[in-house]
Image (cartoon, rainbow over all chains, first blue to last red; front, side, top):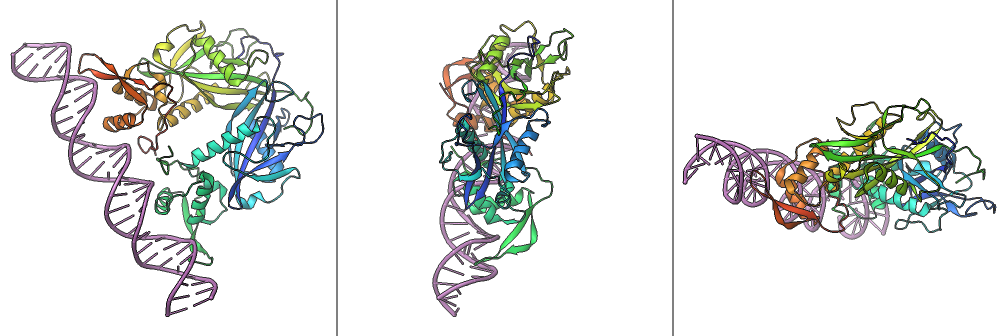
Amino acid sequence: MPEKPELDFPRPLTTVDVVIFAIRSDALQVLLVQRPRAETEPFPGSWALPGGFVDIAGDRDLEACAARKLKDKTGVVSPYLEQLGSWGSASRDPRGWSATHAYFALLPEHAAGGALAADAQWFAIEGERVRPKLAFDHAEILQAAVQRLRSKVEYTSLPTYLMPPEFTLPELQRTYEIVLDRLLEKSAFRTRMLAADLIEPVAKMRKGPNRPAQLYRLKKARAPVFFARTFNPPG
Amino acid sequence: MPEKPELDFPRPLTTVDVVIFAIRSDALQVLLVQRPRAETEPFPGSWALPGGFVDIAGDRDLEACAARKLKDKTGVVSPYLEQLGSWGSASRDPRGWSATHAYFALLPEHAAGGALAADAQWFAIEGERVRPKLAFDHAEILQAAVQRLRSKVEYTSLPTYLMPPEFTLPELQRTYEIVLDRLLEKSAFRTRMLAADLIEPVAKMRKGPNRPAQLYRLKKARAPVFFARTFNPPG
DNA sequence: TAAGTTAGTTGGACTGTACAACTAAGTATG
DNA sequence: CATACTTAGTTGTACAGTCCAACTAACTTA
C-alpha cells in the first residue's frame, strides 16, 4: 500500500466503538457509558458509545477487540456482532487525527440486564437518536447504526437475535415492530417466517391471560435469513 | 473512548484501500496496482488494491483520502464511492499491527480507460476473485467488495453508475447481468426501471445493425434507488 | 354464560415477477 | 424487392406473496 516505506509516517489514534442494542421495556435501547470527569479527558462526563483504543499487544484483530469491549461492559458474549463502518478525520477527536472502527451488536433482553459495568446505562432510541448529547461523533455513528439495523430488519431475520431462546410468533412480530417503529401485517408476517425454515415449534405453549401461543426456537446453527422482499415498500 | 488518557498507546499502521470496479470488454473488472519490487517492501512485485497510508497532514477524513487515491490512479473523480468496511489485525501486514479502511468505487467504462497510473492495470473478476495472487489480505477485501456489489445490485440502481451519460435499457440490463453473472428477464427489468422515476428518455436513438433502441439518461441529482424486491429469489 | 382479548386462519384484491409468445424496426442477402 | 435474421419492445397468462379484512379458536374474568 505505501508509496514510501516510511514506517514513521505519523499514525492516527485508533479506537473501536460498539453500538449495543437490546429491546427493553418494549423499546429499542442502546448501551452508553459515561466518560470520566477528569479535565484531562476529552468530553469529560459526557455519554459515549462503549469503546476504546485498540490494544495491539492483546487484540488479535478488530472484531476480537470489539467483542472484548462488549464483554467488558455487559458481561456477555453477543450472539450477533457486525461491523458498521469506520469514521476517521482530523476533527472528530480533540487529541488529533483519529479513526474509529464501529461495530453493532444485538443482545436478547434476558442478557441485557445482567452484569453491567458501573459506568454503563441503557437509553431508549428516539427516532434515530438518544436524549443525551454524545461525545465525539458518536451521535452520527449511532444514527448510522439505527439506519443500518432498520434497513436490514426490513428483509432479514436479524430480530431473532434480540429474542430469548424460546419465543412466540406474536412476540417476534412485536420485536420487528419496535425496531421498525411501524406496525406489520399479521398473516403476511407469519407466512414469511414460517416459510423461511428458520424456526421450529417446541412442544410448549406461552400461557397468558388469553389464548396460549405456540412457542418456537431458532433452528440450530441457523445464520440470518435474507428475504426476497421488504415488508412494505418503505419508500 | 479510552479508559486511560495515554496518547502514547502504540498505534496501528493505518491505510486506506479502494476497490475500483468498471465494466470493460463485457466483463466486470477491478483496478490493481503492482507493488514496488524493492526487497524492503512487503509483497514486492505483487498486485494489490490501490491504497496507502492516511496522510494526517493532508487528508481531511477517510473518504477524502480514498477519493485522493482513486484520483491518483485513474485521473477521474468517481461518481460513486462507498465505504466497504475495515480490516485490522496483528498479522495482515508483516510490518506490524495494521488496519485498513476499504472503500469501493464504480466507474463508467468511458472514464476507466483514461489517465491510468503507470503501475495500474485492469483485471477481470472471475467468480469472486482475480487471477493473480494479491498482497496482504486484499483477496479477502476484494471478495467482500464483489459480494457487497452483487448483493446491492439485486435491489438497487447502482449499475447506473457504471453507465455512460446516455444508454439504452438493453445496455443497462446487460450491465446488471454482467455484475450478477446471471441473465435477467426482459419485461420485468423494463417495468421495474421505468417505474422507478430514475431515468428519462432523450430525443435520440441508439442505432445499430438492428432495430434502434431508445436512449435514456439519469434524472439529474438522482440518488440510487432501492427496490422493494430482489430480481429473483436468489436463494 | 357472556364479554373481552389475543392467537391463528381464511379469502379476495392487488402488485410485480416469470415465462412465453408476439409485434416492430432495422440490416443483410438472394 | 422479398425474405431471413437480429435485436427492441409489448402483451397476456400464471404465479408468488403482501395487503386488508373478516373470520374462528382458546383462554380469563365477571
